[in-house]
Amino acid sequence: MNFNFKEEQLAFADALKRWVTKDYSFEARKKIVHSESGTSDAAWAALAELGMLALPVPEEQGGFNGTAVDMFVVMQELGRGLVVEPYFATVLGAHFLALGGKHPDLLAQVAGGELKLACALAEKQSRHDLSDIATTVVGNGGGFTLNGHKSVVIHGAQAASLIVSARSSGAQRGMDGVSLFVVPLDAAGVTVRDYRTLDGQRAADITFANVQVPLENLIGLEGQGWDLLDAGADYGAGLLCAEALGAMEAIFAATLDYLKTRTQFGAPIGKFQALQHRMADMYIHLEQARSMALLAAVRLASTDAEERRRTVSAAKFRVGQALKFVGQQAVQLHGGMGVTDELPAAHHFKRLTMIELSLGDSDHHLQRFIAQPGFAAGDIA
Image (cartoon, rainbow, N blue to C red; front, top):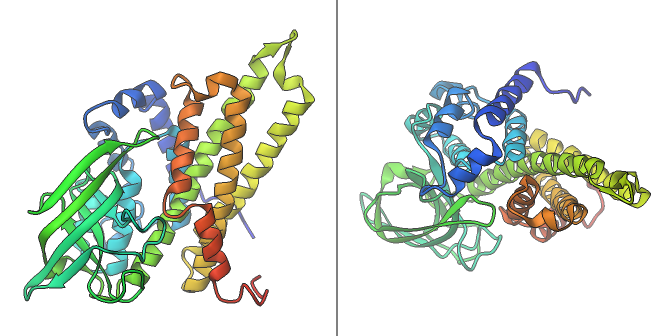
């Protein structure tokens, strides 16, 4: 099997890498992080011009119909460059719209860089269980009335529209009765509390109080949205694995460079065998994470939902293990400098920490993997 990326994929990655190097330096990023919105309109326009927003959108809506493997190389570069723009939130929202198949106009706006999206899926009590939904939706004849609260909505305040999960029937923790909607951020009854997260990105807590949602804003079928929610969350987890890989590559390279230049007892500390062993262990974790992240990207195209769940959860678990080890070792090998804001390595470590907690941490995905059919019988290849 050929594991090399296509020329088109490498061209996308190279274009994004050159833009990050030229226009999104570490110093430029710091100014963006501390700005009022925490994002940059100029950077967003550049991403649109480079075709990054059109990449995952279907061709019918002006996109390139990119696969999860195409997105893999893009997310790698975004992770390496510590990009804080609402790219992930928007492309994940676009994926939900594409799965629903009802909103071609919104997808066209995403492809053109005209629309930013965010996904309001998690709630205070739900932890990593996206089926634990207390937000309710009730039909009102011409549409729906939405009530509830969503927590830690990444780039929620920077989006124009939200993808919202709500329950129309069934128990609070169940797969039946789940619906997905597009809700404009400026709709009456929507309250947003914006804040900066540990890794310099933005998130929001969002409250819905008797928000009126038109019938056409429903994604998929009413009460039958769990499969869409599950598939979309897996897609997002796969993208996060790729982003984590890029961040780990960057922090590994920075640590290796530090060991070559930091001297003690008259020699670079990289010559000490004990530290060489630690770098070798970091490299092993990095390469194993790369293999699992790429496998997840390939399997996201599978029509077998069980296979998709198994592979994505296995990847998120293995990448979670790797990012903890690589990040913690990098901080220790840098010494006290490893946790200062002056070094990009500290910011990569913070971003890795947030990726671990996003769309299910390692423990959650280990339990999800174990719960998949066939695991107890030992017949999973």
